[in-house]
Image (cartoon, rainbow, N blue to C red; front, side):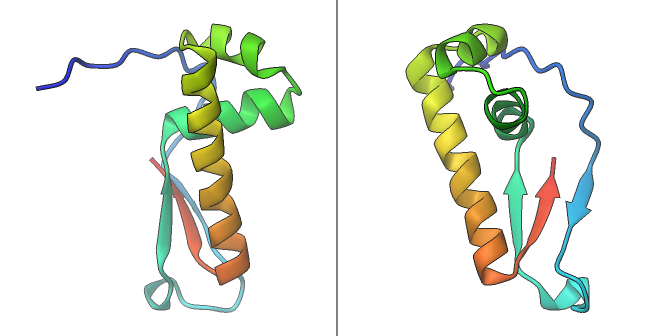
Length: 89
């Protein structure tokens, strides 16, 4: 069993869902963003931090932060382009 990964997350993220207007939720596919991915988006895109500084705040390596950020951006792009809902867990 892999060891539990501890990361520092400062944002207050509750379970929230965003979806396209005018389409019932039961007709949509869902993309799930984890708290790690949302925190990476917050630090890099909202606060404008460089990856090295953002990785330090999350207490992960820079390459790990880059992978988390890349996955988060890909999921968000998929949801926007393909009309999917986004669920934050």
